[in-house]
Image (cartoon, rainbow, N blue to C red; front, side, top):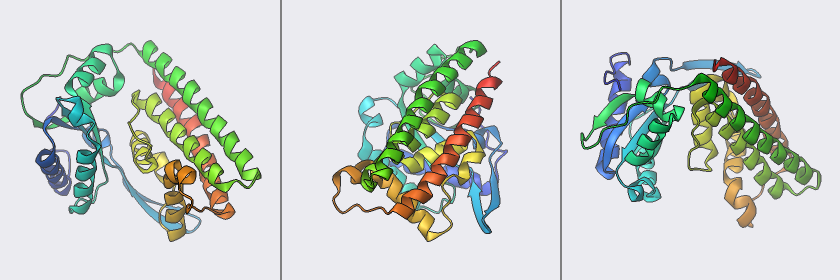
Length: 286
């Protein structure tokens, strides 16, 4: 695993230093690893224009925190606090924090899980307690990697399309809260398809915002699926994020026909892009 951040601008190195400090203050981390585009050196900071509106977008920091105990890994309170502290600090780069135990990471590396083996080869070690050593990466068989990616694509992309059908049926009945939930599930599954094809890793979350940032880490084309430049765009995406729980259990949850129509156009774009980019990725495993 690499250790140098010399390829990053000074302000990015400073942000990473702050992130490591916040994690270590609240969690007993054994290793903290930067992976993804900032580790590889192909991060993106750019602008694009859509319907005469200019949007800014940038790659995220992807951070793997390795801990000893499953209790620490599964402590949602601790990791929620860490996320909030990172958001409040002067850190402009969105940060995705993934937590795994030493045992699960080593088991993944030993089995040739390409999420963990890629991190062990491309990641940059930001902190090391020196109490544990990671396993040696298993040499991956491209044919096996392609087979796993094809299986994940078929399983999850098909499931996502079925939820789109359920959304359309609920929408036609004017059951808008039910439609919102079905649309949330479709989006979660399209994002899961992307992550499994690219990394063979699925995060333990239903948070569409986190999913969207992780998908964009796989390919920048996913950055503009749910634009956030206008207030109504933000409101619609917030309603979609909340639909997993509130559309089922909160009587006060409301979403309109127009908002669902807007969101469904974005989901159709996500579906097309997921199919195109995942197929290209699968073909690259040769």
